[in-house]
Length: 524
Ligand SMILES: Nc1ncnc2c1ncn2[C@@H]1O[C@H](COP(=O)(O)OP(=O)(O)OP(=O)(O)O)[C@@H](O)[C@H]1O
Picture 1 (cartoon, rainbow, N blue to C red):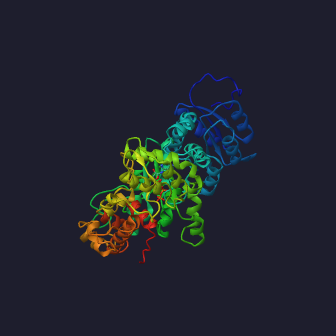
Picture 2: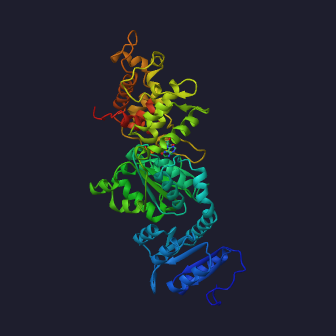
Picture 3: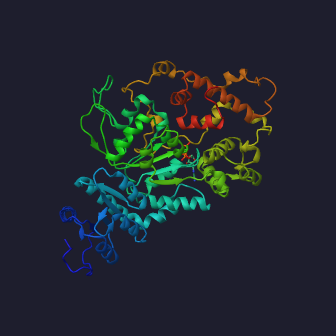
């Protein structure tokens, strides 16, 4: 405990050093003892002025400050430390129940917070994360540039990569917005991969894909015997992501009742399994994403303001591809290389056509276009016609023999990126078999085995009968086939997209993308 020693002497110790700022002597003492037991050196300050002096003289692995101090607010220190350029993680101690303060501090640059009364195990976790952050902090900016999977050299993407590297050092919830296919999930994965949580799970949950009746079980888990069919205890998404990151994709699709439960879990950092009496602590960083305007959802009362406030601590905006078309050459080269595994080039007029396109489906659409083009391209060159960007172009007859329906869906490059032991997407895991059944599951089970017939069977219902003349436009024809099949699957599943996707053998995201792309009105 160094408060009585003459300050600012040269340091002999190489142990991590922590600065505790609190005006209450007994709290300082408790914290000092805890940190010393953890093998750290501790300096204590009882007000802002002292804290500033310490911070100016020493390098710290963590600063931990109370919010209310005799000569000012802990928030001022948060801002000063965050802007000091020293990359020191700072965390705040908030009064019990004062989560608003925590949000304000996180927004100002705090790395994390603990609430009074301070739980020692939470404190230890916080310190361990801070130490890891300090260790990786200098390397992380370089890692971001060298190993980022977010391709592109545009100003917007460079800034995005820098923002991600900064966000990776904090625990603050991040809300990612951007059009469909613009890279929101990829960005979330990067934040996780560059954070101190990288070796813990990243769990992506598609909130729009979980039947409402199963949500609580999916998010929080359940105890054996909690309801009929709960034959064994099961963890939910929160437990699966413990220590790591939980991505709530399409968060605007959460029903209001679930929003209340989620807010509580996030605030308390604890969840209660269905059928359990006690809560269990969970240490999860939340990243949410949506392509909808959350503020509008709040204004329309479809999204709770308090949850919005809690999730939207830091906002990350993904630019649409049409706003950064200068990234198209690099993205195309990267995607073609990934898909074909050998050198493939874009003919100059093909590249020019892509540069003139506005990509309503963003990078995912570019991937789709290139994947389809690769199927047509020969000799390692993708020609303009292979892109099939303009429906008026007459396709070659050899292309017309390709199996049409399978083509667009099966070749979709967005097959879920499954990383070993980290992924548990809601769409993929669907309902726990033993959890309460979705209202229409009985009907689905009866059809689940019989996948929709292959495209050739459907052809007679379309203008082209496959026997003589070629269709006037192959892309338009294929779209029509695809639209018809998707509509049939949707009707058959009473517009349950998760089950329709299962029926068609594609992922939920793939189906949702096709529905948007083909502008399928679900009331059709
Ligand atoms: N900058 C990028 N560099 C390389 N690939 C990218 C980039 N941005 C997106 N992608 C790729 O585009 C596809 C779509 O990205 P992603 O799934 O992250 O989008 P999204 O915004 O989460 O979509 P949705 O809103 O539909 O959930 C993925 O295959 C992803 O790897």
